[in-house]
Amino acid sequence: MKIDLHNHSIYSDGLFTPKELVEIAKREGVDCFALTDHDSVFGCDEILSYAKFSGIQVICGMELSTEYKGHSVHIVCLFPKNIVPKEMYTFSYEKKKEREKRAVLMMERIRDIYQVKIDLDDLLQNNEIITRANMGYNIAKCNNITEKEAEIYIDNKSKAYIPSTKLTVEEGLSLVKPTGCVTILAHPCLLPRNIVEELVQLGIDGIEVKYPKNKPTDEEFFRSLAKTYHLYISAGSDFHGDHGTKHAMMGTTTLTENEFNPLKERLRLEW
Image (cartoon, rainbow, N blue to C red; front, top):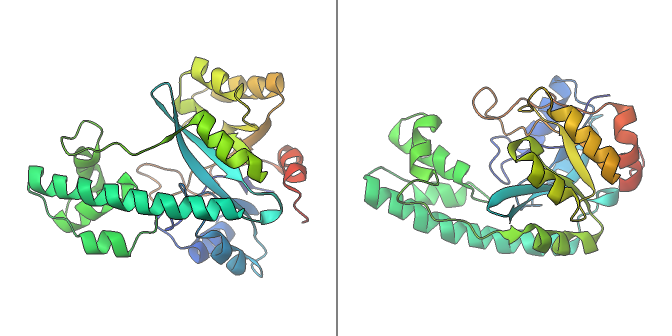
């Protein structure tokens, strides 16, 4: 089996609908994948309905945005029995409104400072949870430039940049752990190793030991941390649909069935 536990849809900054994700999984030979949109669970019900008769197993989840000592830390949250806690719907709605407000202010600043075209109506109407990636897609489309060229307007160093409001890791864990979800440190290879070791001691349940951007020694190091701190292991391609530029294709980085079994048992999945 190929099991990919980190993927995004149009309900955050992915380019494909839940239905299309199921079709892509089937095409790429992925047996099981998780939907983990940024701070959003709005695609979960939809994707389960499409997956029902597809032969593909789907796990409902969310990627929570937090910060720790100045570092952006993402935590993949997977929901036992594929039941999305009501608290996560409330959280997603609040983050949606918060991100919309930030996006409007930031895009208006980009327009005024850099004299580039934007389309706020398109941005707000066609995106559920607006991230900087969504802003970049909008700028690229409106100005007939590449997404790479658009990055300078949304980068942290941009004069128009407005930081998003993030929870601390501790606040994030306090929010999601009482709901029973399983928490996994996403793409630890993007963080300093000493920070990773501090994070896994804060009560995180698992770690993404396999990730497309891992350096040669990363997986071995993360597996050793998992063993030391009794963590579940995970793997994810972080599929957004822009594979070949920023992220990998679904199914690029996966767990085997044997590797997944401990996590499957914790999630109380009945397939």
